[in-house]
Length: 429
Image 1 (cartoon, rainbow, N blue to C red):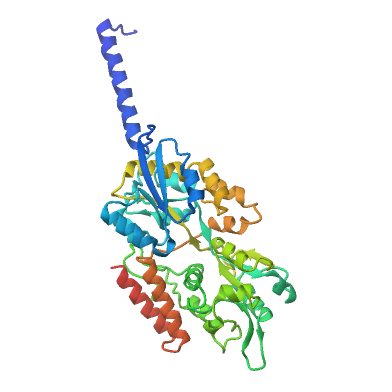
Image 2: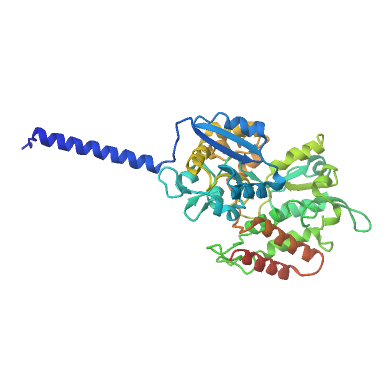
């Protein structure tokens, strides 16, 4: 039998329903990323991007005024830190994907558990490497506008002359092509290098990146699971060590190796490449403009990085910046701006169009996989992988020292890599 309610009961129940709706709405507003719809917000963004490019994008921000400051990359870190310490720093700035551990103390992360934008939403929008690089201790620390990857850049004319129709897809193929591409005189001296690989950063800018990639491709666990010790020499949970990858890298600078093709005495790898004295270098998309400027008529090709023979899944190496919010700044409004720039496909596409850089959003990566100039980089982004570096500057120096110690004969590869692991572990304590 239907229950008849009094007028008073109906009013009470109706009021309760309204109150419940209000509570739910308030909870929703509290959980989602703050969206300031006013015009009084004033934010400052610092970065290394060209002011005309990045400043123009920020000018369209509808929720307040954004001032952009272009900083010289040569002293970017020191300027940011000094300004933050003085209380005059930016609200938003850029941090490299390998530098996050150095910056966490001055950053305000967005809660990774947020139902409005948490790790799941981040993984749906961006490639897996972003979560690995910028999610730490329960917080999302940064979001990128672009993701670059290491690729093989080669001289098409030298490939044609050597009878190589297709760039090497595996490192076994690469070894075979090295023998075809290099040129050695009667005294055993290199007249033309097949590739800039095997040397230190004295001649190869990306030497440590190439070595790190080789280790990751071999399945090396670079650190332990909680990020407190390096394991690339002794081996992590999977038992794979990096010594084989280290020896593979070094063989190309070993005059006794059948694949000898480089030494630091050949000078700057990029200069050797543009002069036609080196057939292959490993570079990022961001490096291509400088190469083209130095040698506009060089017949340059770009191919995906060689992979381990028989690998079930490719592994590539990323290099990119994430937009981060300063703890001392207007962090809530700063995150509003970061979401506006990085997660909105229209804004991200505008940035990509203005800069010519590879995209970061999955939706744009799919589109650019058919772009002749970006297809290699766009394709590689989805399988990009880096590793936790407590201090990337010091880690680079440690690995570079290990390479040099083997090349100059002061240590064999096992001792050099063991010393590197000890030094990196000390940074992580």
